[in-house]
Image (tube, rainbow, N blue to C red):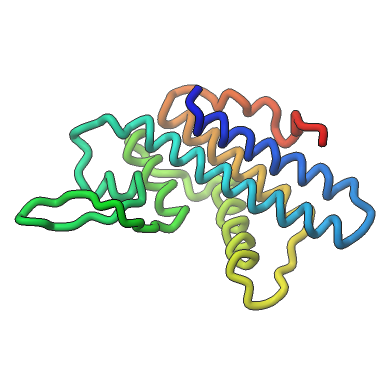
Length: 180
């Protein structure tokens, strides 16, 4: 297991643990803080998993520059008639990147009718409301739980489609192995 795989798994475990702590916290301010942490760490884990998948395919020399740009979120330039990646950051929407990686390496589109896809999009909306706050977002235990489950289901779907196996830590569901 690579370092990014280990790190992405630890981020997911932390997110699940913060959700558990939110559920057992009696003070509203504590619940809110734990829910914020769980949601943000959950999406950090998903992004790290995507980067791990991208890294798995980075050795493929046949990947066109645009595909490399999406995989590694790097800008590309046309220099002297040749396309090449730069060190500059080129951000892509999370859901676009998931769909691209899924389809590119499985040969199939994501089933957008799947429950996890709808819950993931809702979770992304919540995360964006928290990160780019223009008002106080309403985040509940249920919405964070659904978001974390959708993140786990998205990782599982990608593993099944790309690697033809289940995500190794899927059996843990939303139960954390941490005890802090």
